[in-house]
Image 1 (cartoon, one colour):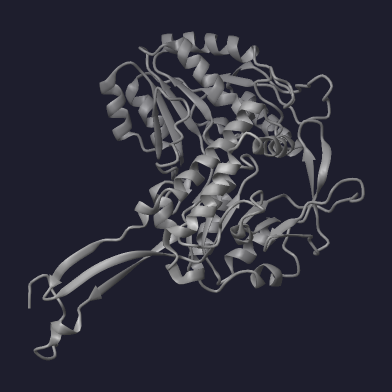
Image 2: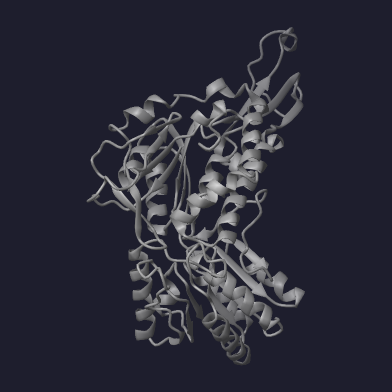
Length: 504
């Protein structure tokens, strides 16, 4: 089950736009609570439709489509991956992205290359999941004791739920539905687009707010919950799920740093920072939001190069082929980031480029904000401590390598970090010592590929297992261990001792 969480308020008009629905048991189900959340197209503020923020009548309908235990009890093995593999192939076919890109454009208004990446990264996780039977293999020990064999197997948890954010409308839901529930025939199979597959009815999509999330968290049929969003909500979901006896992996906010050593190619660094900091309007958890140049000379040169590039960025609609990034997701997001910029100025940061009050010709009602660049930011400032989640990049200068290393290591968030240098010894020391979950060396956005795991440390992640890759198989399955001895092994009478590693 994938739950998309939206901010709730009552809809004033429902007759002029298409009403969004839930997708439960292979059917589109309208909400019946009487509460709706307006959905706007960020590019021009047009209403795309009201979405139901909670499931249909209380929880009866989704529960009625949900099994009490995994179908097949794990006996289907990898055969059930066949329709999933076909679905993954059709999702990545040349024809399908036209519809997928249009949906992503309406919901996030991002330029085409960004939308393509959103979809492709999700498809890659699905492809890995359906090709991962080797990660479902157990262990086997023959003759663990006198005539005793011990072996283990992985079996599906059962019903699982993924609670996904707005900023990656395709990728992160696909991370959830592309998790290893597929091979063992668990609930959470292909996306609704694969309507010809019999497994399509195994996916439920609920548009909702806290009420829908709480219904899932307190439902004893749901065995595990995955979440991506803000840290306060991640902490709440993790704590609630744990109290209910569920597995949980909850990923929150970030403040990703890029360390720039004096020997780095500053033109390469500046280009990397602009792309990593302002891509997707900064609305992604792996955006680089803090540049940490080492030494005043490095900092001065980098600030000059960044200022030139940031001023040249083009903000535009998703249909503009020359746009570097598009609007933010809502008017509230624009106002929140604008307030953060004001706080930075008040606290003494040097504002090199001011993106407030930006408008795009022909789209004056859109949720646009120009790129903003700060210099001489210190760790005590609010714009350094808090996640801004917008097109704002700050420069926090470090006197030497040790000071630069300490900045991301002591920050409360620990999602991603990168270092740009030509010195291998510095890079090796940094990767070993920095207290952050994902590290890049001369890579601006250190997002692991599908067959590795994704997850941050400290207040960026709650739970002991990461998303996708091998950890996903561990998270969505449980281990059963069997100790076996056949009748011939007790032919000489009863045994009253516990089997040990020494033969009886």
